[in-house]
Length: 146
Image: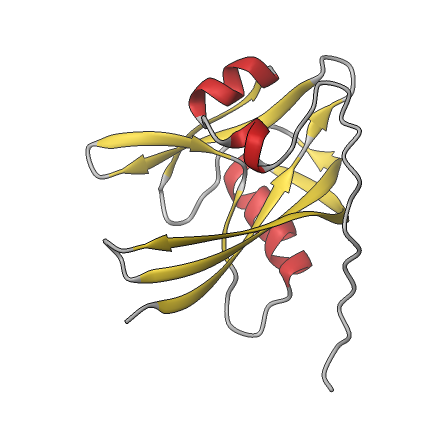
């Protein structure tokens, strides 16, 4: 039986260098790279989760743009059924630093798209990130309590 987990991530490009922001995550004795973001907390909107996680994991305050993609993954080891929402985001303040209260982030850095794809082999295929970043975003709107 799988438990549903919503994950919100930020896709942030540095306009000057054409690099993207990535974080190095600790997993037991090993590590993996990802976009900033993690599980959405109870009562938290997707947008609020992107803002909180980017601040904790990378030290930046961001303005969240449109919904870039929605992906789905089953993590049988943990029993999680994850819906992964990736938003474009723009840095508005802060400086690069890890301030993760869970101490699961080892490093944060700007990485070119080819290296990013080596770190996350599915990145450019599944997120459809092209060198010219011509991907059309999906609309996202939080309707509030209904």
